[in-house]
Image 1 (cartoon, one colour):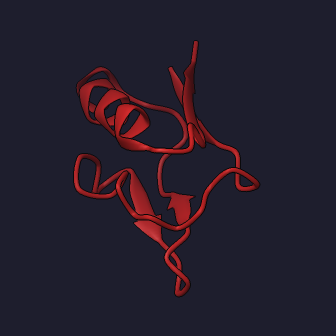
Image 2 (image 1 turned 120 degrees about the vertical axis):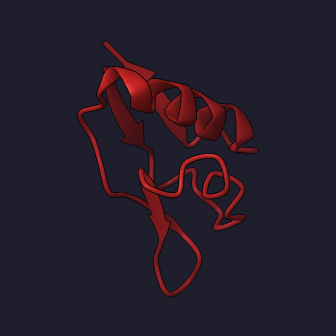
Length: 63
């Protein structure tokens, strides 16, 4: 499973960070950046929560 971000959709709300702090970080302007792309099984739950938390649908999971 892979986590992807569409940086053109990210508006810097930071809602994705609390559910997935080890997978996502925020840059100096508050925009999300991925720390991990290839997910292990135990990271998928956090990644799904981050995807669900994003108000602009900037994150997505892909097999």
